[in-house]
Image (cartoon, rainbow, N blue to C red; front, side, top):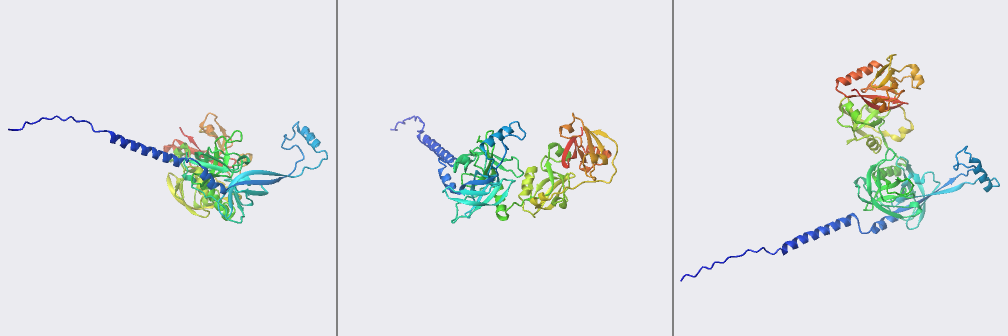
Length: 494
C-alpha cells in the first residue's frame, strides 16, 4: 500500500530585523564618536594646557622716555587761541616761583615673545620707538633690561636682546600661509597693563593690507587691545603665526577686528635684523601700477594681471633692458598677480640674486635676467630718468579724446617748472563730460607716450590713434606725467 502523500504548505515569514537594527545602531554610534573626536580636535575642552605651554615665552615690555618740560599751554589749546592766556594764568598760579618745568619720565607698555634660548625677543617697532630704557618681564616675574638689535618700520617689527644666566623658554614661528579662515588662534600679551592675559578667537580673514608696502596681516576676532602690540598670535600647536600689531576700533577698544603681521613676513625680517641689524630687501628699480581691464584690452593682454611699468630710472631693471610700458607677468618663476604681490616678492628676494623676469612687450612675452639691487640703498639715493627729443614741436592746438592738447614750448616749461629736456603734449583743457576727466586727467598734465611710443607733436598722437584703430584696439594707452610722477591711462577710441 502506497503511503499517502502529505501536502504541506509553508508560510514564509520575514526573518527577525534585530541584527539589522544592531548593525545600523553600531554605524550611528561610530559616526557620533567620530564627530565628537573631530570636534574635540578642532576645539579642545580646555585651552589651559596650551596657555601653560606658551606663557613662559611671552613677555611684558615696559619702556621709558625722558620728556622735556614745557613752559606754556602747548598741547592744551592751539597757539593763538583766545583761551591761551587763560591756561597760561592757570599754570602761573600753580607755579608761582616761575621755575622751569623739569623733565619728566614717560612710560609705555607693550608685549613681546622670546624666539631663542639665548634671549632674542620680538615685538613691534612702535612699542620701543624712541625709548631710553626697555625692560622685559617674564611670566615668572623675572625682569631683564633689553637692548635693540634692529628695527624695521615698514613691517613695524623690532628685535630685542636680553642677557640671562640660564637658557630662556622660547617659541617658534609657524607657517602663516597654512592658517585658514576659521582656524582657532590664541593671543597673549599685556592688554591695558593686565599682564599675561589670554584671548581666543578665529582667523577672520587673510592677506589684509592696511597702509604699508609689505603688509600681510591676519585678521582675527581674538580680543586685542592697547598693550597687546608686539605680542604673539598662536595656532593650536603653540606656534607663532602672527605678531599682534593693530586694531580697528572707533573708540580705541577691541571690537573684534584685530590685525597680526603674518609670521612668514616677520620671520624673514627677524632673520635679517639678527644677522645684519637692518633689513636688506631686493630692489628691481621700476615704478609700477596695476593693470586694469581697459589697459589690458589696449595692450592685447588676455586678462588684467601683472604689474605695468610706468617708469624705469637708473637701476637693475634699466640695466636688464626693461622699458616703460612693459607688463611684468612673472618674477623668479612666480606669476605676478598685481603690484602689491610684485613688491612683496621682490622685497623678499635676496639682494644680488639674478632672477628671470617675464614681461609682455609689443604683443608678446620676453624673458629678461635681472640682478637685484638693495632697496634701502636705492631709497637713500634715487634718480629718475628724463625723456627728451630733438624734434621741434608743433605750435598748433587740437582737441581729441576729450582733451585739448598743444605741444610743449619753452614758455610752458617755465610756467610748469618742467626740466628743459621735458617733451610731450600738454593738456590745456579737459572736457568735464569726457572719459578722460572721469579717469583723472586735468589741465597741466603732460602726455609723453601714446600706444607705448613717445609723442612730441600732435601728428605723433594722430599716428598712434590710427595705428590702434587699424589693429582693432578699442582704447589707446597714454603715459601721463603730473608733477614728475608717471601713470598710464587707457582712453576709449569709440
